Length: 227
Image (cartoon, rainbow, N blue to C red; front, side, top):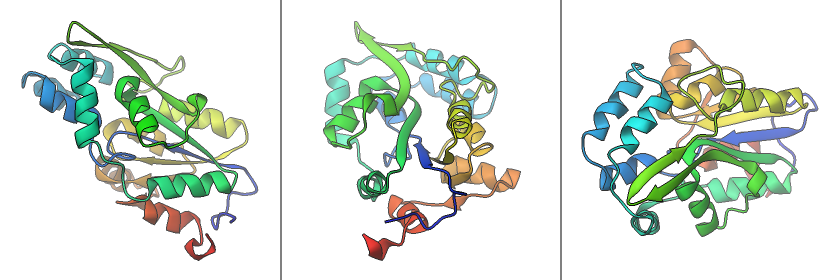
């Protein structure tokens, strides 16, 4: 079941964003729509209008959250949906000897919970995200900032992590959907984009493959009939 794309003989790694990419909807935004004061959306707007950094946006939004850990889990069980084709794509990549990473500016309190709930089979070292705690119904973000971070619209360092994988000899693809994914699109060997990332790639004339389901990504990477 080899890949049908040309990686130049390099091992293939794909880096996935989580919110709105692996999931149908943005989980962070959904939680804050349900359990935060409406004032949080002014901070959200300021980030997407490029007036403040992602860190400032998270801290500003977190100040308005009013929910328990149980509220979060209840929301996830009822509302979170896996994007069509992701499970099948991940299984196929694993069978082909490729590496899959989740690199997200989201938070482990919901991300790791959903990875376990959906039994997606990612190891701990293949998930990179921020940490969050709930203390007295307040959302406390604890950031995992990349030490070589160059972009204030991304904290986790998606572009930097992709470059590290490339320096280790891998051909690295990236799949994402948002503003914080734009630095990654500039360095990945292959980009799958939707929503804001698709718009950005078109504006910046970055080569990319549009997608709405991961079945489309699978069809691009593999001869589907072979599986």
